[in-house]
View 1: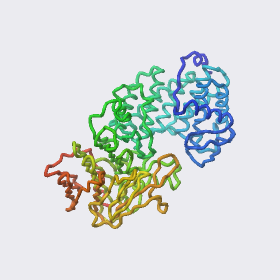
View 2: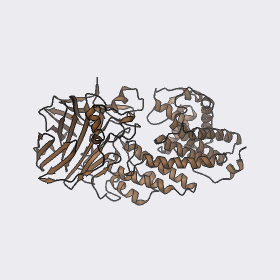
View 3: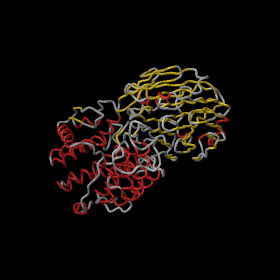
View 4: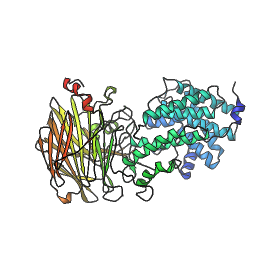
Length: 616
């Protein structure tokens, strides 16, 4: 027997939303359309006409993301938002129609693969909880609230089950928030206190696992880190209403993520398309409740110096997350340059074949970029391309992708770094190709010269291809073993191989489909042709040294000579000797040994014996 008096008399709660990105004008048209069965899900999809009972088993776009959002009941969130803004009872009635229809078609049996998807169920429970709270306050219909109560109870029971719950996963994070919200709203349920305690205990475990101590995000997609900053802040606001005294733990996590994002966000304020993310605008609009100190650095970058405080260090390494970020300055103008190197394999969630990839931002735009996510239809050629090694700025072995099965986790990492005023150095390694160790070193002589060194180490011969992918809109022209990059009619970048005697081919292509090469995704479900270049070599132990010249008009001379495991680099910046071997790395500049900061066990050290045996 439910204690409805407890439910009726408790305090009012403002339940957090899933999305919060629609103007009142947009919200009005979305809600009015839904009244007429004109189904709007998101900007990614066109509006479609469909009767309510058809929704749950249809897919006009043949797209799992569309099905996911339908079963999340995101349409109801739009209606609830509009109901609160415009006080139109018709919006609430349509929301009730939708939730009861979903219950009839999916609660005991369904034909949809997304009806009980772990993430869709979490979002649906949040929306059901918010709907019940609004009805409790405005229209206390006992029969309807019993329908919603029983629906919430079933969802909590399902999420409670270890077979359904997703530990060590961002879906589990939302499952915890959903159960906590439901246990708070439906406080007349027998297990509400238990579910509230369980969900918050699980939430703390997820925070400790997913968000690393250096502020990086385990699933290696910076845009997801930003999404969860906003989402966690919504949870904080809700927990504060409930008197939860442990919100400081969550706020500390958000602060660390923002510090990391300060270095990863492009100078123009867009989060780069690393991992399963497309270029996304970063904003602090929904994070104003944080301590000012947590916002000072990112606010400086996002306001282009108008507000906030510039970070004290130009270069930063996030060793646990696998990111190294280098800049020539914090002030934003046409000559602001950012270089990112990343290499890590923590989890298969959102994992691309992108280890040892880099991005380059200069002249007010990205120039060398990663591919974006396209969509989550995993069997499509487009999706398979954007996650492939060829869609990232790394070295591809034998034309294949790296091996990223569960047993390979941990075999990719940053290795060392050294920061100084005129020069930044960092290195990384992975062992994700069978029998091959790939080591990459970046020498950034600020501001105009970046040297990309790749050392491919194997006991047998392979075909290697050092790949660079350019941002759509950049035009490229090949001159021998050099590629010139033009934007706004001017030559901005020149990439030249400094070890070109053993290059078999220098390729430059765009928008190719057999095989897929030369594409970039800047918005959901859209691929744009973009230039891609590659240097092909064959061998067992092979060195690459590519000079990325960001001021080609200077016509500077770089020369590289290989002597065993060492490269001698002569340039206007002086003499550099870089020695790479299984025993480690040594860097000497103008006769002075440079102390490198080691970042712990390297991928090649973890797998040295396996390499000799040829069994990894």
